[in-house]
Length: 170
Image 1 (cartoon, helix red, strand yellow):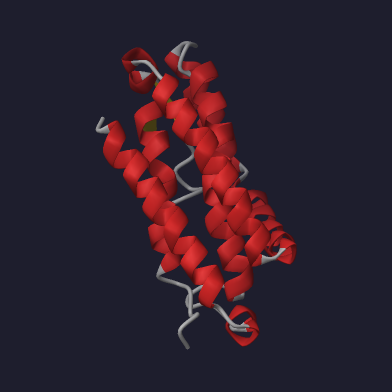
Image 2 (cartoon, rainbow, N blue to C red):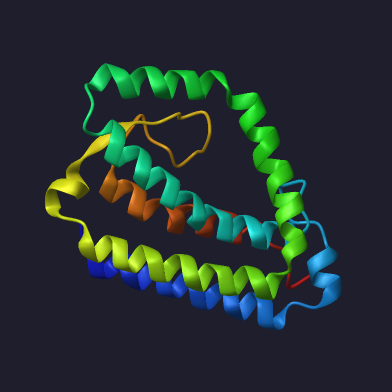
């Protein structure tokens, strides 16, 4: 894993979000995004939430990566079975989360990325190689099995995908 490349991508995403927030007008933020039911304001929050969720994913891979393989396989299967409620919560969470405002979301992203930088720097090669099964129905970027290194790369994939759905430039 090229840690420096991951750190640099996180910083590019952080700078992109700050630029989007700084240039978005009130009308831009109220506009519907492309391909989602969210407004741009809500989708900006969802971009940040994609980074936040990595913290929970790292805890899970640290735990399940130490357990026998069938344990994480069953856990992923259970989560896949719960896909409809997950999607509803994911949608509604970003609807509500969008209320915190884009500037606060950008500040929150600064905090999250700083924490992820420290976490990645502390991770050993053995940590990065540890993996578990994931619910592939939850997110197009979840693979059937993912290592901790994959989890660290995930938020930038999520960010880039949803960034293309923003309609801030009209």
